Amino acid sequence: MRGRFTTAEARLRGAGMLMVTDEATVEIEGEGKLALSAIWQTIVKFEPKNLTGFV
Image (tube, rainbow, N blue to C red; front, side, top):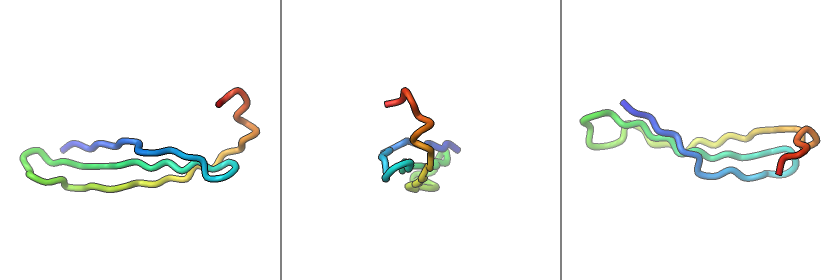
């Protein structure tokens, strides 16, 4: 069995919010098709004032 997660996109959604979209797949050795295929979205909230020095 093998799982693979790939970040497809990360974008700002207003002040202090970042939306990250990952693509996930799970394969089982010897099987002809994927066991799982999914798009996983996460919203991360942060304080913009704490990011001094970051671009």
